[in-house]
Length: 333
Image 1 (cartoon, helix red, strand yellow):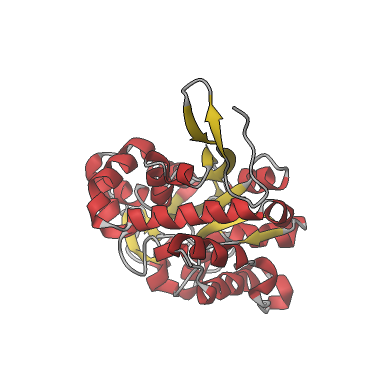
Image 2 (cartoon, rainbow, N blue to C red; image 1 turned 90 degrees about the horizontal axis):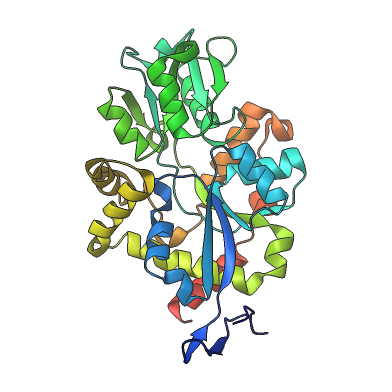
């Protein structure tokens, strides 16, 4: 049975001789993301056929660092990325890649966490902050938190890039090169607390609103695959509604534990205390937070010195037209 899309952008229904039934053809969408709890909606959507109902098979690929994700998207190794949208900004500004952000998703759910002997953020003086990459997203959140405590990178503390959250926890546990703090998100943040690491609070409480995770694509790919992208976003919206529905709590916890190889108790805490917490966890309908995104740009201007230290207008980085049309697909309008 051939895979193809009808001219009006919807999946076709074809006769399958092997089964003697009418079957919907599916288009594969290659999605790259980090292996963490922010992808609960994705896990649920795949498990319950939400994407298939929209004519899509998701080829899910995990990355261990944002550099690999950025490079892969630019090279066409996958179609859509889901991670901190600051990575999309970095692609535009540092690699001249024509990338657009097409949705929101989460607030990042990060906490500023340290080794147990650190009694205050100011105690990070002379220590090392471990990050994914030093120039994007959650590293910039950490720099702001430390700056608010009177500490300046390079003068008062060092930075060491080690990759994704599990690697940061490992470095902190082993105290490699004085690795005393890092930004951690669930479920790993809960597991880290069980291991004795200390939280100084949620990033959004320490430095304010922040547009964390979202979907972004190469502009050319979006233009060439508009109806497909809209159906994908529509399915993601539907899956997010499932994730935030208490009726799906048991399956959500089971999927988090299995996908992320976590104790079910940690998965339960992740669901109850992070993912479903309004204003902190998954954002209903993966709505994009414009004010939170302005904070993303402001942090880049402050710590990367871009745009002469003054954040630009957000328009060049986002195209929410795909999202608006996807939401109409979901709500039948």
